[in-house]
Amino acid sequence: MFCYVHEGGDLVKCVDGSVEYKGGRTEYIILSRNISHGDFVSKLCGELNIDPTSIKLEFTVKFDPSCLLPLHDDASLVKMFKFNMFCCVYVSQCTEVVVDLITLTR
Image (tube, rainbow, N blue to C red; front, side):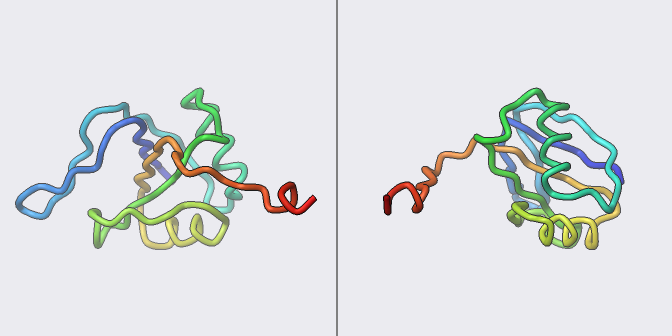
């Protein structure tokens, strides 16, 4: 599957309802439909030369390209493949602080 990867820009909804990607960079990768989420993230980050621990991944579907859907596990990756002939993945820097609950309880 052909996958556009957009990193560092913004998804902008136009007046006519269409969506455009502004700024950043756009690359592409070729994916197997049976790739795991972990392998997908490794491949994507390797191609873009970015740190996989500080990113958030989202994707759009053909029937509503203005809606960004989370791409965080194998199930969401399967959904992305199911609803698209080609993929559009958006990479943004993760700004949320993730707290390790196990560490806090010790």
